[in-house]
Amino acid sequence: MNVRKIIILLSVILLCLLPYAVHADSGIDQEDRELWRELNKTSDTILQYVKEQRYEEAKQLLNHFSKQFLTVRSSDFNLSMNDLRVIVSTYESAEQASTSMSMSHEDRVRAVSSFRLLVDVYDSSEHHLWKNTKESLESPLTGMAEAFENEDWTTYQKQLNRFLKGYEVVRPAWQAALEPHVYQRFDSQVVYAERHRHEPLAASNLLSTLSVMLSDLDMIYGDVDESTSDPSLIWVILTIGGAIVFALTYAGWKKYEGQREERKVRRRE
Image (cartoon, rainbow, N blue to C red; front, side, top):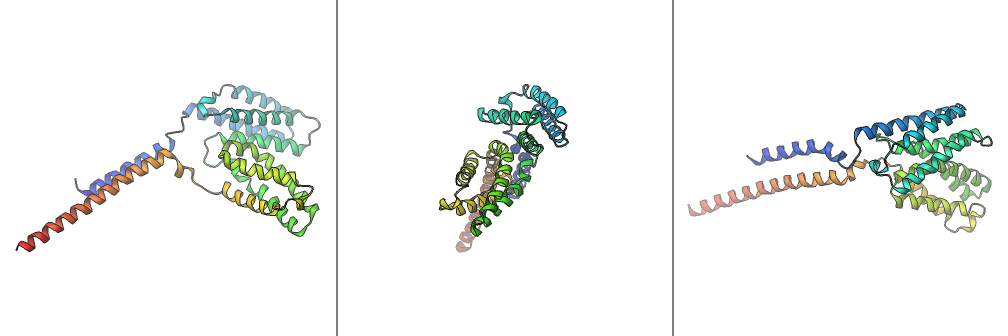
């Protein structure tokens, strides 16, 4: 078999193996995927009920969600104790939102929206809902930075309140979706800004912190193809790629040897 045929064969093998490499480590069978998809749909209906102020129906559906969720085995979805803690805590907040008489409608919607975004993280969709929330964080953060520079503290406080409300909605989903060090870094910056909310000038580097937070948002919401960092995919690419490089190197060496032999023959003549 000549070198060109070898390269073509290896390329075909690479293309055939890529889909399997992308899904090789998921460890979740189709039945489990469908179960979580149903949970995701249920959470969406709950949110719609709350938005329409159909709180009693939302409460009943939350009870149904709880029964569905009890059939989930954490090992099947690689759920850690922290994942379970965040899910339970966010569920309880949503449940309270459906029953509390003192909570405003806006607060109810935010609490259930947070629950909705979190549940969606565990569904195997291409684009998770939390990735649509950048504007709700970026806009008030930018407003905070501008107000700080202008020393307009009334506007600064309003923008900070807007940011904190938006962050509380997306925070559980971030805890589940982001790498721990990425989430913890941003969360510590939020804590720092909130700690100095009444005396922002006392924090010497608050403006630079806001700038870093805006940069972090670009990174967190960046359109990065997760499959490019999948270990099994990288292994396949390196393995097949290495074979192709070897084939090309071998072809070059054979060509070099052939040319050297030709030169030897010419010298003898």
